[in-house]
Structure formats: C-alpha cells, structure tokens
Image 1 (cartoon, rainbow, N blue to C red):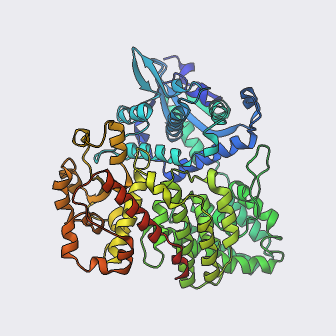
Image 2: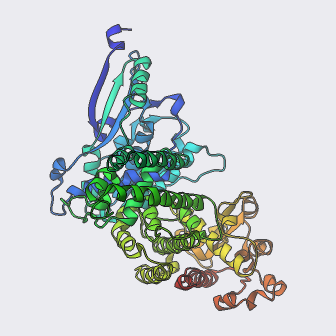
Image 3: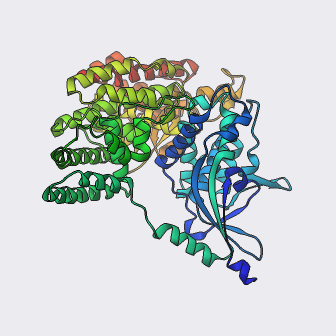
Length: 616
C-alpha cells in the first residue's frame, strides 16, 4: 500500500445530495445497531423543519432555496480501503440511517403531487434491475426495501433492536412532519434538505487513522455544556462565599440526580422549567421571523437566562439568586423527576402521566406543559393532581387528533400548546380544571372522527393505545382489577390487535364487490379488539361464529360481543355508566354490526374523555 495514501486524511463539507448520491457504505461491526429513540428523531425533524420555515416564503421560486439558511448536521467519519475502495462508516451511522429513513418518507410523500425532486438515488442504487441501499447491511435490507416499496413493514416477534427502531422511527417521522410542508412547500423543503443541510465528511485511508479521529472527537477538548455555563453565571451573581459554596454543592447534587436518568437530562430539565414557567414569546411561523423565548431556551438557555432573569425571574440581588436556587431549583428538579418516574410507572394518583408517555406530544412541549401549573410550595397531593389534569388534557388532544388523522408533532401544534402553557401557568387546582375543560372544548377535532377511523400501516401503535384505554376503562367500571397497563404494556403475556373478521375476502362477497372496500371495513375501529398473544394467532383465521365462543373467556370489551356474557353477568348492565353506553351482543358480524360497534366506541370515548373529569 502507498504509505502517503495510507496516512492521508481529508475533510470536506458536503450536503446530503453529494454525500449520499450513488454511494455505498459498510457499517463497522461495533456500531451495527440503530439505536435512535423517538425523542432523537422528533428533535431532528423539528430542527430541520423549523430552520427551513425561517427562510421559506410562499412567493419564492425554487431557485431561491439556494439562498436559504443552511443547517449543520455534524461530522461523519469514513475509512476507505485503498485496495478496493470500500467505504466504511466509523462514526455517523445513526445520523445517516435517520437521514435515509427521512428520505424514504419524503419519497412517498411527494408521489403523485407533481414537481417531484429526484431523491431515489440518495436512498439506493440499481444494477441489473436490483436495488441495493446506501448502507450495505443484509439484516436491514428487507425492512428498508419494504419501507421504500410500500411505506410500511410488518414486525415479527423475532425482530432485533435495529429493525424495530427502524420501523418505529419511520412512523415517528410520519407523525411529527408538519402538515404545512406536505403541500406547495414540499418540493422547496426537499430541495433545501438535500442541498442546504451540511455535514463534514472526514475520510481516512486506514482504519487506524479513522479510529484515532473518532477517539479525538469524542474524548478530547470537551466544551462546557449550557448547564455548566448557567451554573457559572449563577455562582458569579452570589457574592457571599459561604452561600456560593452552598449553591455549588446543591447544584452538583441536583444535576447528579438528573444524570441518573440520562446524561442530557439536565438540559432537558432547564428547557422544560424555563419554557413552562417563564417564557413569554414564541417565534411567529413566517419567513424571516426572529427566534423568541421558546426557541432561545431550546438552543441557548444559559444566554436567555442571563438576558431575562431581571424581568422574568425577578432576580436582581445576590440574595435573590441564593434564595431562588436554594429553594425553587431543587423543588422543580424533584417535580421533574417525579414526572419521569410517573411516565415510566403507572400510578393511581396520576395515571394520565403514564398514558401520555405512550401517546402524547413532543417532549419539548409536553414537559413544559406539565411544569407550567406547578407552583413552588405546592404539596405533593396538589402536584400530582395538577400533573394528572394536565396530562389528561394532552391525551384528550392527541387522541382526538389521531382519530381524525391529524398530526401533532411539535411543528404543527406548538403555537396552540404554547398558549395553553401561558394560560395554565401558576393556577391553583380548581382554576386549572376550569381552564383545561375550556381548552378541551376548543379542540377542533371531535369524536365524529371515529366514524371513519381505522387501522393502517402507520397507526398501529395508536390503535393499540386506544383499544388498551377502552379495555382497561370498561374493566375498571365493572370492578375488575385490570388497568390500561394490563393491556398496553403488561409484565407478562402481551396483547395484540385482533381483527374480528379473518383476512378472507371470499367469505364476504355477499356484502363486498371490491377487496379494498372489504379491507377498509375489516380495519375499522369497530371491527378490532385486543387478545393475548397466542390466542390471537390461534384462531385469527376462524369465522366469526367460531371466534365469538372464545371471546367469552377474554376481556370485558371482547366478551360483550357474545350473548352468553349478558346471561352469565346480569349485573353488567346495571352499572350506571355501562347502561348509558348501550352495549348489545352480536350473534353475527356484518357491516351493520361494525357500524353499531363504531357508534359504541364513539360513546365510550365521549364518556372516557369527558370534561367531567376536571370537576371531580
């Protein structure tokens, strides 16, 4: 090997188009897993779309995109084998995988809309009629091919972490991409994404040099974090040495508590605290607008605090700083950590915090909303009631939008959510309920969406949430010990979505002439229930008259299909809430029965998410 080539290192800034077009990368063995979580992909989509919208104007020409603000996505490191030219990703696999998923989503989104931007060659290359993706990994190939060909991939029980994350992150992109960019602005955004999003490509011609670069970038010259810069500023404002040392020690303890959850949790905490309790302004959604409180807290909260502590925090003297950070700082850290715990572990005191962990809004909005009504010195009982009420509003908002096929990523709802933050900030428990009830009444999407709602490739996660809430709610009404958790994420046997109709069009030609019409009815919310894994598989292909006998052994919602349930449980219809819902058995299951079950689901949803909850 030529020694000068072996020692060569190159660094070039590249846009996505030049980085990926007709390229092939192998993934180094130690970083084959794709581990990005929902919060990572949501933040990427939010950052990209927000940066684009700062420049976009509906009167622009496509050529104007060249002058739009650029976005720096970070470095990627490659090692090239000088003998065969094979290019290996040493660092940046997570980003490139996420970019590829985003490109696949954009590819589908622009289909049939005209003015399509050519991006398929950034996703795969073709030789002798065979597609191969830019990252050569045989484990990923079937999943990526399905996502590219049809926009969905059915997960199997045996799938590994990478495949599950690929599918889930693709769904997250679909859910969080703002609606305002799906129409006239779409080709502008795709142009901007592939031409104005920039990475630094660092290339070495030996693995040794590539790993040295990787280690240097990750281990040396660590910059101060925004939290550390905030701490330095706060301590500089406390003139008494004893008090400064006390806050310094307190700060270390609180940050350590946050880091026990995640290494970046301190930054997420300060963003949620400052946005929830102090932010007054948000950037208008038009080109050329300047970042305001909400955005500045997200990018530079230490600088924002420095500029605003006098007016918004009323911190002027050394004693002000000492008292505030000695008392309020640990109080809100404790509350924030309680939120994180309640999100992970269902609790009877504030169950809705757990629900919105499974089905809520972007964390950058959600945690600020939850902290907004919490007042310093609130006792734990009040804290939990306020958290539950606010979470109840968030879940109602997201469920009603989801059944109407509306998005609720940060970009599409942040203005309305920010107004809610300001309305509920610092309210007592009673007024909070009044305000949230009013906000629920103002949600434009209503429960009529149930009439047209059904399951498709991208909303299976939501359907599982909805059916788990309905199943747990009915069990609780009649005194069973089951809750939402028992169906959605139990410790033992998992539950799966059961189609009441088997996937056999030939058995329903008396009511359908077209198979796609049959599939639409089969996937309707009125034709779905939850059954334990295994049970679902064992008779999923059976006809209804055989299945319904099995349903009598399952959860309440499934049991109500069987007429024998009503005979063996005469007290079921005597429960007042049940009586109002109007349950009835179904001896057969035709289109009319699905219609009746849809109406039942609507009544259950209206009852389950009633605003009466805010007056209890």
